[in-house]
Length: 276
Length: 249
Figure 1: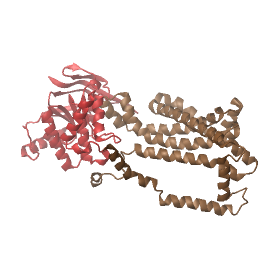
Figure 2 (figure 1 turned 180 degrees about the horizontal axis):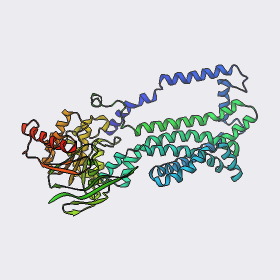
Figure 3 (figure 1 turned 60 degrees about the horizontal axis):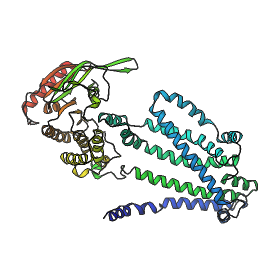
Figure 4 (figure 1 turned 180 degrees about the vertical axis):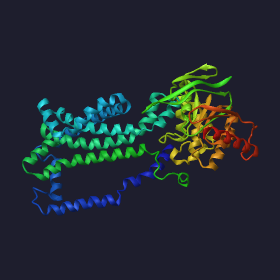
């Protein structure tokens, strides 16, 4: 009986989600066509066409380059995940603290705004000088110091949007601190947390590559640098594509989770709501 | 004995140009099972007083006594119906009531039973699993009422609960409220600026001026049930309006 119910609710929502929208198909196709047309204007080593790029991608994934794909992709993905997780954690604590305690705000805001202005390349060089060429430390260090201040600012804004009248309601009914966080604050912060997760993941990956170029002996960044030095533009791009696909997939997953979490916000309000 | 006795209560807010006194040395009582209305112009401090009784705000002076004992209002089982429904939009109707019941320390089975019973009682038995956004304004306000009554409150605070409803819906809601009140025997402290509403609902009406002082108390001389269109009620309403505007204008 329960399985029946589950499949019924799934069949209602799944097909629309899986079927790509016509606009998406058209936009992806036009990017591909545009790319191919542009590539005809340049020599292949500067701007490879789609077929050449597919060949390069096969080489990268199949291990036909001086770099083992599993090792390089594994290293980069692990650094992105760790850097992102640390940034997200720090930003959540820092942002909530700034939003909750007016007395602390001044102390916490100062360093944050200084951090926001430091260029990522500076962190990369500073990291190498401090820690040398490292497996994890320099890339994660760069990702965290650049990403977490951005995320913190957004979460802080989210704290400012918390509806005080609901906090009053909770207090009037004598709800515990824990219940207030769980049922009143966190649900209101949720869209900000999801937004921060999606942006944070995408930016972490971009920064991780920069850090790897400067401060690491493994990772996609190292492979990219190698092929850049030998003028193989197709390979530079081909190395980036698998992680791009991964990050895109993670973003889709987060969006889907977000939609599930905000199912209380009906896309079509009940008829009674419209009548009113 | 008075269920609620507010004695000498003062509340000030720190404003930009020094402290602002909302009310000073205010006294008010609500007897067991009594329906008392506090009537006053907007901004006179009626809501602030309810918030003090509810324990949302600390008074700067004075005591709040309950059944003759001074209490920390935060400890009292008080039901509060706000001007807006103040529902958690991300929780279902049932979960919204559950939130208040859990806070009141009610056990799981009893919570379930009360949610069911109170939703039925306010005519929303079918809406337990709906989200507030799927309901009309009147229905949302009834969820707020069910939430306040479900905790079996010693005192029910109501802050202009019908002012955002259209007159037809509001009239129905007032009748429902009177039915519920006579069934449960709950003591009610009701706030409004609507003279007609005050006369129809209340046993006693306290009139507050712009400075937050109670300047007149009136016992409503009509028996119950009251007819909304009874000419005698209209007369009392006219009398009260005259009293009110003589003082306030």
